[in-house]
Image (cartoon, rainbow, N blue to C red; front, side, top):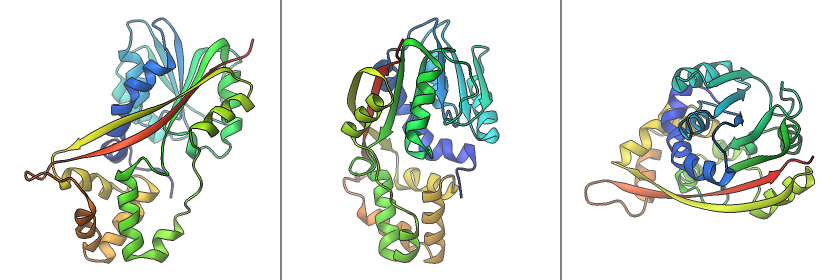
Length: 260
């Protein structure tokens, strides 16, 4: 299963992306009057943030899913935004077509990350910024790790069938940017927190099955008669008397300049 149900994804992971996007946008040093490429734009969270950052900045979003692009186009509501179907590893644009190329929280999903970064650099003008941001999946995203832990406790075979590949850390991101020919490479760590009104506010978007992980978790919960949700509720620390909670998250960002 790949990503599905863009409206469900927006409720599940999109709100995290929206919380992180402004900090990443500042880090990427996007300027008004620029034309920015949003690689793997998905539901359009980053594209909307770019459009909102200035009066004349333009954005082109590219993603392999036509369904997600249609959702992104409806949400952008601006003549300064356009969206095209395309692969990050073979971007359908001319060399130097953009002032900057950004990828928010998608680098880990690319089949060939290095090839995608080289493509981002190719379509960026000389000395233009190429930047990406990814979650610290290993240690900094409890909203997902709690789901996996609960699934592994109740259905280890099914949970482990979801491959847990290695995810890049901060140093590896910087090394990748240099390997791909970018210079003046800078990295940064972001720490954010998402407030939930209740456990249900956290849990219900998981049931939309918009990602492979949420689909697996929802399936295990159904197979166990809701035991996964009950176990998850027990695992969450720091729940307030009114039922509200805050979950932290850590993300890694990298930027560099395209060669002349």
